[in-house]
Length: 242
Image 1: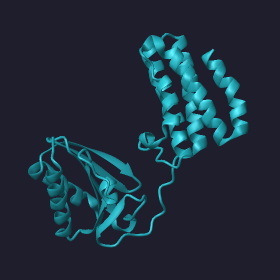
Image 2: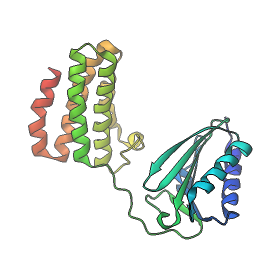
Image 3: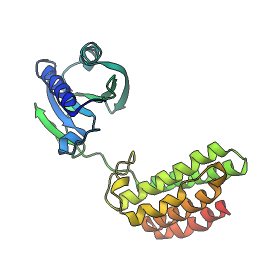
Image 4: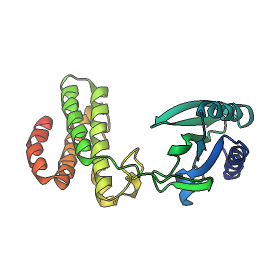
């Protein structure tokens, strides 16, 4: 396990390496550190603005992470023209380094604190669309019903879980909370989350009950987004659990 001091030292070293690299024209803290909300389990999130071809810079920082900072593995996540390289260190610390084309570099969420350079004005990343979440929820509910009917317990467990995921995301949107990757779930009021405890199956033979519970909660969330749509979908969704 890493210490907070080790995390701070590594982040400072990476920022200093960026400052001394003429190809890097800007850097920003992202993630919880940008909001002064770190805890002992937080990872390192940094964004770099890169002029020219970002691939050599990406390669150099990757080599540094393995040679000097104990990286054991990494993976890439793409967003627009930006590569987010996510490192897993031997200490279990996660280090996310985003390499932005300089002309794209800027805040897309409140979790962005400029360290040096200039940031461009960017439109914030929009939250998920509620109607899209509803559509994904009823689609997975259909597959939960068929999986249960076919005796495919593990597939049914997966589908019921996705229905719960989308219903909870709708609740997060309703409360103005982050609605992706579960980030807002623990900020929901207990009056919202407590009923969802009934949607957790105690085993594969309990999935029918859990499916019924999550369907009723989904119906409630749909009705809060669009009452007419809720009225149309409610009898169909309830038929799936009968």
